[in-house]
Image 1 (tube, rainbow, N blue to C red):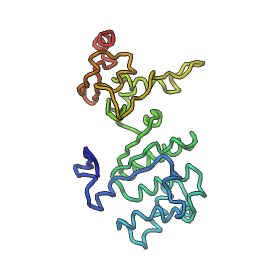
Image 2 (image 1 turned 60 degrees about the vertical axis):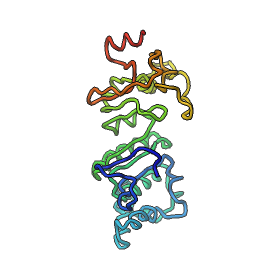
Image 3 (image 1 turned 180 degrees about the horizontal axis):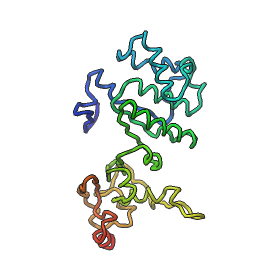
Image 4 (image 1 turned 45 degrees about the vertical axis):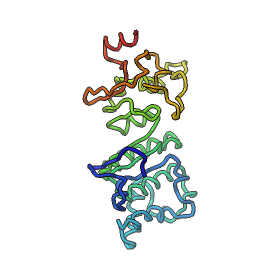
Length: 261
């Protein structure tokens, strides 16, 4: 049971006791080998959830598995193979097929391409974009890699130490970030490094989540921090953007005077 908060899809709670309700959100994990049962053929792995939740009959299961394997770029015959007989990228495709076979309304992907070769990453990103569009699925992509986020996400939410600090349309947030932490993430991208220079780094270290400082958790690492940052910043709404910062960036004279205070 959740300790606090709520999650809803279409106004209905996701974490209800109802069986059918629990199929509405599915997960794809970072390590595809660890998330697949090594003793099950991948066809049985993909069919297991739809059969348990009666989304397909046993007579329909084989055709359903073949459909999803082909959808993620694998041959239908792959259903007879075990996870160890696939490459890392192929295993991640199996994990994606297993999740989509549950006909979810939302798909949560936790760093699903972080452990894969860059060329394989690019292939899966292109496939994911078309798959979620064709299946009509909302995609929640959790990643530290802003490059992959910029390819997939229409809306970007930035978190620091477990707290939401900024959100808005992806292109706008990346072009004109309001929170200094977001700016730090952007500056640390390899594409931003000058030739012969080291990558930019955010000074300091992330605080322990069991002992967060008062106010803004980022203030001990922030070049713009003042005494005001010891109190929690209120949420600022400038549709379609929101942020939580006492000294937001890119606000002209306001940002300049606040940063110098």
